[in-house]
Length: 531
Image (cartoon, rainbow, N blue to C red; front, side, top):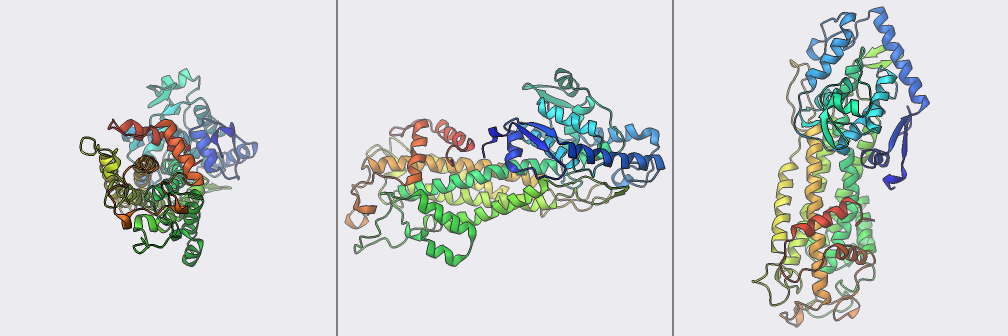
């Protein structure tokens, strides 16, 4: 689904928010509104909080302090101070600001969580958040400082600051004080009432926002990786029989079956593949794992990404603050704990790192004259190798990213550190896991872009008949359908090849390659390859 079809997203109290809708808001700037049903349950939950205050009940975070100060009772006339102090003291993040799409997703997810009627926040406060989102006032939220335990206390506090006329925010691309940004957008700042600070900064919306956008991009990148692998298989004169359905049925793994099917579909009618019908004495009976096991490796990543997607979709629609208001009682639980997202994000990072891992190995085979089935060294024009380095350094750069991914793929979720006087004595590190997964995603996207560029170059050399002269008879590639020089790429890979060539010319003489890689990365980001 294209995000620009969603102009208005309606938040109800009980219907699921989808990943497409989240992306429409985060990146497509769709308008968000509350449904009447959500307003009703928000108001009902708010009156329950006001009733508790009237009765002078002891309720965590409403009439008590926070964290290990839960045993300190707060006077009713100090309510405003308590909630404001909570937000201000908890806003101590450091590092670069989170990207705009992540912050927009955070606001949307916060509203979705609060609009289910278990948080005791005022309707007017939620509507202010929506006004900020719809007028594109983007709080400056530093990326670091969350343990992912009481959820994302630190980043969510920064998210709330402009609402109180504090902190900083972007408006029309300019970084301003929170108060100035609100003034220019003509949004009145507010004072928080009882329970509201807690409702706003307890929850997993930072890790979930980062994670949801990473999963959305990973689903797209998965399809791009299948196309990239198919184009490399053709460029390397690989064998298609390793992708026959019968083999993959026996393995029983869904992702693997799908990946094998993609390889068959993407390369349909190609003359670039190995001709399995001719059977000379020295037939190449099998390919190396980087080609032969594409379905097994990609399929496992595909299953992992789909699994993580299911966890993220549930978390996007979850109520994760504390305490939660049920009719006339407030129950202190731990829904803010980020463990479900922490484990899922570590898994996502590993699954994506593996896509880059095998992609770089395919790339290496194309630039290595001993492994490429007759291509020139580093895909240089024949006779120019030496003076020209061709794609030598593209493999270096891909290898560097793959190695960086191996470090980033170390799980964050296995770590914990005690905080708040040992009251918060097991924490998830979910936000760190999500940020690492997003970084691995970016590295992997770059590696796949490098593979696509390299495969397109190899295809051009094959079509021009460059590079086979040095081989003896038994090493000569055997092209599908008995072709002397291959001309036809597969049904889908031909479109991908053309798309690349629309933006990047073949490289017969050395030139600066970085801009070429960047162009292909932008195409992947815009879903142009996977479409």
